[in-house]
Amino acid sequence: MNIRFAEEKDFNSCVELDLHKNVNIIKNKIHMKEVIVAEHNNKIIGCLKIEYIWTHLPFISYIVIKKNYRANGIGKSMLSFLENYLKNNGQNTLLSSTMTDAVNPQKWHLKMGFIECGMLCGINEDGVGEIFFKKIL
Image (cartoon, rainbow, N blue to C red; front, top):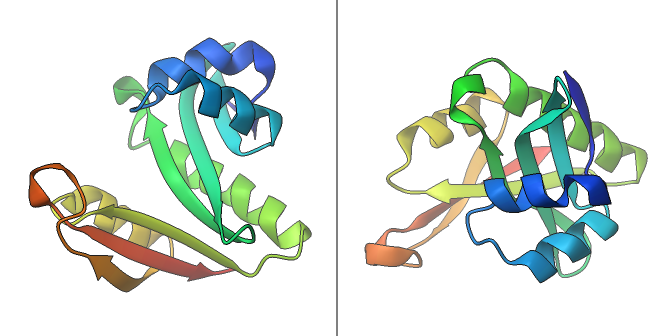
């Protein structure tokens, strides 16, 4: 398996995995090195997108792995790739979030060394809240 920044050739695979399918944003994020992919046998099987809050605070906005490949350490590998990149570029904090009713993603964040740092109530569809996590790099 290969973990790397997405390239233009990965565009369709990234769109396929993206929840919102906003092609212009995905194209721009690939160009800005804000999309990380997991590649297995020349196929994209995972995708991680980052945003920068206030232009400098990194935030994982989306991480997805194809169902057949989950629970194999791919998310951890993409996170490690991101953390190394951020540390090498002077960052010392990483943020992420998950919905309040998403128990497994919450457990994953805690297992990866994140700590809860806040919550927004009712921000998602159906009034579901969002729990925010912080990790010191």
